Picture 1 (cartoon, rainbow, N blue to C red):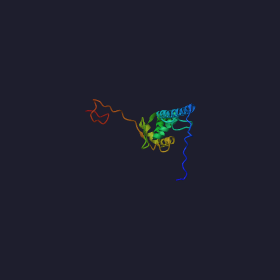
Picture 2: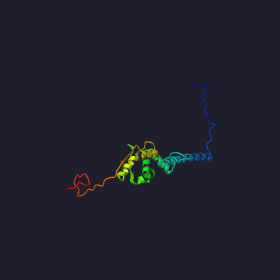
Picture 3: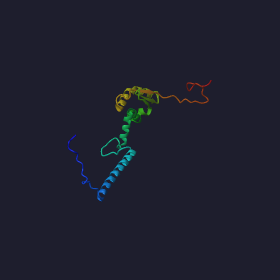
Picture 4: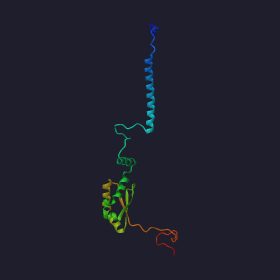
Length: 181
């Protein structure tokens, strides 16, 4: 501790009391600070209701985007690029295989796990023709869709007549010619 005594303010030197104008300035400053605090709180509540801050001059993830870009982003995020591409092939089948072949052969389904495209033909002759063209067709499809998208082309012939069930059918019958008696 020091040997010098602490200086205490003399009672004769008091700080002056604020006058009317000074009191008004202090009151105005306090009111502005309170209003600013209330405004900040209200603005934060509005932003929370709206889902966060608004986008500014720079692009970020919340900005609106074109429909095509949004769809491409969705396809990429969900991993739907290959099924969407194969769906496009089914829509463009006549341009890919040619008009003659497209009249007689229709793609039925695509197995993404096995990478097999199943095609049904309307006659056995066209099914045989498509089986002969399968390697070239698989190469053309992979060229259009990306390498390895289609590994195998499964060709089916025409389906038989629809099985009808009714009162004249034998229970457990196996085909259209299986009848009573």
